[in-house]
Image (cartoon, rainbow, N blue to C red; front, side):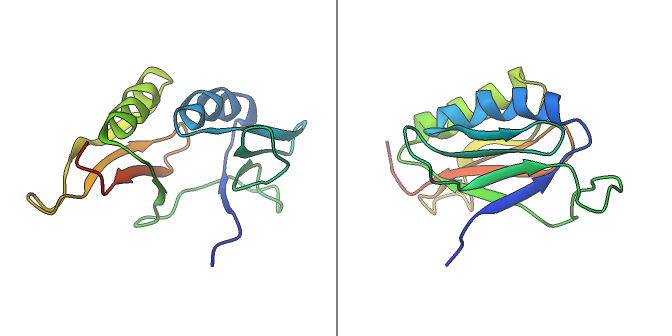
Length: 128
């Protein structure tokens, strides 16, 4: 079972602005911020933390993993599409807009890279 997910950033303020926008689409809000260190996100009106953005503890440059991806399960294709659109408007880059993968599978995905190159996916098993 996954406790939480953490990605690194080289510009915490820009990453906070990006994730405040895109994670709101899937019902996560910033629950905690430690200036110049990290921001934490969880379900609205809770103290639960599911996702962190942070400057690396070792003070070296944050890098993304080739082949690494963070995936968020959503309840509809509309949310998957809105997450992708919001990610692009917030400065991310597309790694694939909404669509079934593989075609005909019924599973609907979209992919965005954040400002530091981390690959973020939203997906749903819903036909709606």
